[in-house]
Length: 291
Ligand code: BEZ
Ligand code: FE
Image (cartoon, rainbow, N blue to C red):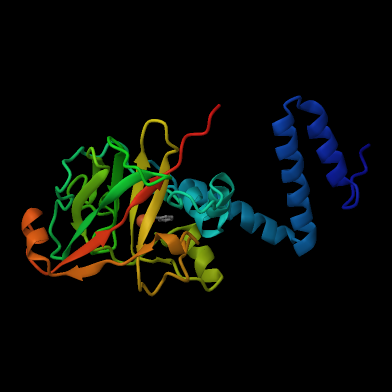
């Protein structure tokens, strides 16, 4: 058949692709992709000019990507797709710590540090925060030797890799839990910050009247032998953007009190002066799925 019309082209395209692939997963994905894309074009009655603007937008998104900037991840995040994939992969069970997006600013192989040490490598005179707690299994038993990877923005709202004046590995570090499952580190008190808005994603947010702010948070990535890896954040209770996160990544169970602490004994133990900020948060890991 050659006479394709708005009424018959979808079926023809689906049939052509589905009949050429023998991989059932590929068949399911390509069929659904074509069906939904065609339905979208029909639904909004897409004009040629709008179609071209869309192509230009995706082209600009690709051109914005390099080893430090991933505009496609940012696009997925701001459209809520990253959190949808996360929700499908890690459904809420009420057991273990909830996950949330990785984000585009994780860097592998951060320095390995001793518990209680600081990841502040440039002092922007924000009040230090002692972050400490335990990593346990679903029954609350401690997990020794778990890896705890931490990263966050500085008081200027930038990650070290976005900030040419920041020393390498500023506000990044890797810790290993002690025999009792405990971890402890010193960092800055996180602030709310804007995702990068100088590219196509920023134009999309502007065009739709959305802001690019994320509520203050610290990123954690945890892993231990025999457990499912966990990628998550801890958000600062009371932040103004908790209900309007630009990337839809907040979860109530991940919001914690970063409280002012006057405990002189604790301060002395970690080389701090009072008052400092204290975050106490325990993480629960789930057993790895059996294959
Ligand atoms: C972040 O928290 O680092 C982040 C997550 C998603 C998009 C942009 C930034
Ligand atoms: Fe972040």
